[in-house]
Length: 487
RNA sequence: GGCGCUAUCGUCUAGGGGUUAGGACGGGUGGUUCUCAGCCAUCAAACCGGGGUUCGAAUCCCCGUAGCGCUACCA
Image (cartoon, rainbow, N blue to C red; front, top):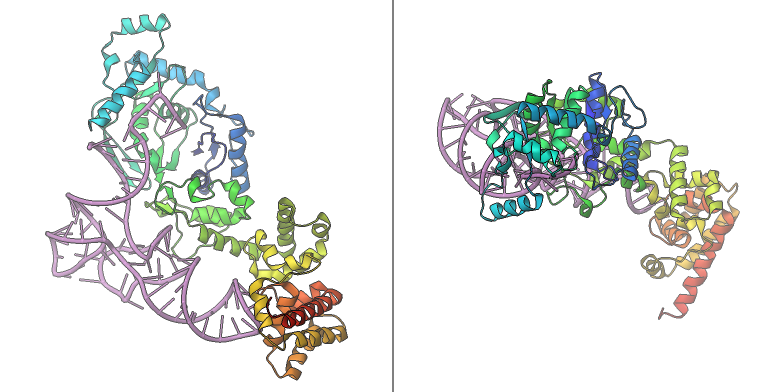
């Protein structure tokens, strides 16, 4: 079992889903999860790009048994360090006549390909260099003439039993004599993958279904290189909302970006697992342990799946709300610090922050939402939002009630939840109105908004002094405004 | 163009020769509470089209259509 990403700088959710399925399959079946880095393309970066991949995998909790940083008996785990293996395998194919040297100019081939495409013809390599005698080819190679090595595709057809799709067949003539070793002696993907999968004794290959058409090529390579091919399973692709391959323009795509937006790794894993796999269609919440216990390839879907950001958000809420208060507070503190949203002293007062987080309670689906429900706790004075303020002004008795509430709260003793509630409701009763008639104006005066945690929690958090001051301040302003109706 | 894969509510999916075609997200409505969130209840919402096989097809087969993928000296 292996996951073999190329170092692209970050772990894409599609890659993450593939990695997860590989991991689950290996764990479920007592296999070994190998991480191999496919860095055969010289053009692409490697070092810093690798970090993002490993970080993403680790964050998700997908620990590899063998691979970078942990080593293992089948190393090295970077293809760039396995060049000798590919050269040796290519030499064997050359010797057996299953491959041949190609001196064609890449630019010329590209032109021909485009020309063929323009005339609606299949853009296959025309086997020009297959016609070269072996002596001539060897002589030109010996002179140092640049050339690639191509696989000689045999006639016939290639079939395999895909673990998620069943039998898949390709006619070899549609496959082309593809390059296995480039002029710079680096292997191409299909070749390196086969040489390594064979050497690493890979039993199962789970990958995206964009690799389906690579599979017959690889199978052909196995046939001439020797070694039993692994079993293949092609997973459905993950698409964006418009039905095309998920990419940056659809929104966040790297798992670390989701992390930074407050998505919990447990939620990410759970959500990814459901993209292309289902337990029974009913149950949706699974821990990693439960996933490894239940995962099986025959419940993997064949249809591409559109990445639903909203459902991820919902699922994150499920996990976030289930976290112990201390943990939620910790996550909120981390986010506040990262965003630089509050002075360090406010963040450091952990017991107050914890009370605030408790008051916000189920309203948060992710730490980032904390301030939506709590900003007023951390400012000297609130500036009511226009809509709510206008509503307050529309109530002629509001100012007077605010003052009465202030007085009632000054008298409430002790200054705790129940006496505060009793004082507030008592006022409503004596005013002959429903509690909401007192509470909503208070909410606007105290928080500046129409939406907040429970009012008694807010009052408690604010403390008697600040509460009373804000109530009276709002009353003052209401009265001033009614003097000058223009505002 | 060629080759391949796929096709159940808007989305993720369960099911599979006879079902009121189930669940979840999202949406609507009602309830609960001081608002919101949450929770509870409830509603709307789907088998791509056409042929065939069959007593019976959404399910099996074929064709079509659509979407996606591959068609590199990328992976």
